[in-house]
Image (cartoon, rainbow, N blue to C red; front, side):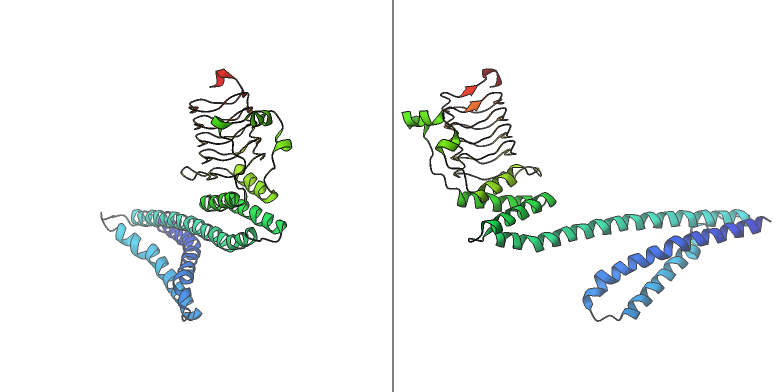
Length: 325
């Protein structure tokens, strides 16, 4: 009776092993044949599948017969039923270990496939987007390239710095600073201009430049060490409301009359920047460097100026809350 029970348990153990081991071995070996033998291009398919079947059969034989017998040989089990039980338990443990290894390998293979797919999509889409961005004839084509790059930046945090540099270079090239105001040599006319709206006194950046700015401003920052470089750009009257410009390099940039309401400018470098008449309401300027910048007539109501460097900054006529500094 006990021998029959043990034999039945033994048969069930073998069935479970075959149920899980063969498909897993087949899948692993199929992946091996695709990645290793596939590129050779001269291996017949029947030979590959013959190797798969032989390897799967060898793995099943090893798990069902060889390893359990070896692992239960010592210490010696006198009772036959105890020996069957020990062998079956060993097989169950081996199957569980192989299934766990297979699951981990499957997850790793899936993750690798996904990364390769993402990289392949980036490689396919990036050159086309760059080609569109460089089109000199059609604004619509350039806008399509900008939006395609923004999508790439959103889809791949790994490639975000590359796309950022491309868009920033496009902005610097097409938005030349044209009307910087030195705070030490500001004229009465400049002070008067600071009280008027940007639309009346300044030309806004071109449509494609504005689109590139918007794409950079609404990105989700991926890590540190890759600040936006817009040094010397002419962004007068730009709409950067709520933009993410943390750690941005904005040295000598012209943001005259720009809308920077609730923008994130933490630790940005705005040395010698022109912010005359800019709207910085509730902007986060914590740790920002504003040495030599001109903020005449700027609206700083509710702005966070904690640890901001304001040496030599022209704040004449700027609406600000002293408690925020």
